[in-house]
Length: 275
Image (cartoon, rainbow, N blue to C red; front, side, top):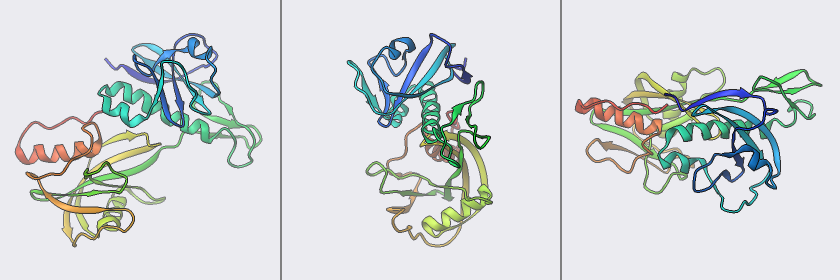
């Protein structure tokens, strides 16, 4: 049974549950990040907007978008990444979706064309500008993530933004007018000066930081020597499958691509991409 499903719910409805998102992340207490909606509305919160976002275990869930991280007794604020690491992937999916809707709601309170206030469109995930007669929908940015291999070696790199010691696969956003396969070739060349071949699509994962659709690939090494991109790649190396560095979180598509290749090389059971 799917615990979390997205839906456009009318904020005028009463009851249900709610999650609260602010610039510091999600509000949580000892029981998690979902609260009785009516109780939250009795708190002294500076709410920018409210959105009905779906159902969790059959119960309606709403999102309260806050201007600031207000303090509530017994509660704290926690970033989305920590929820991913906590272990309940269905909760992470719910909050990942909520984070994207919150980002969209903040960025489209006013029309980007004329600057006039926008309004939510009933029954649709859209903000409407009456003056321009235009609807603003949540943005999804396609990006590629690729594991480059050379027999029993895989090419991994680390960004200065990564957790200390962790290496991961290469990734980057697709440019306008560019196929994702072209994006794979360009990004690998830009980041490590390596040419790849035999590009294969492996799966996708929504990555809400803040609105990426990660398209996962496997590619084989063709030619070139590793030269890390200045200011983008701190280090990049070929690692033997039996001597790997610390890797990304187990639920990430980056880790899935690595684990899948390890399984195929060893003949063991292939992992399943969380989704």
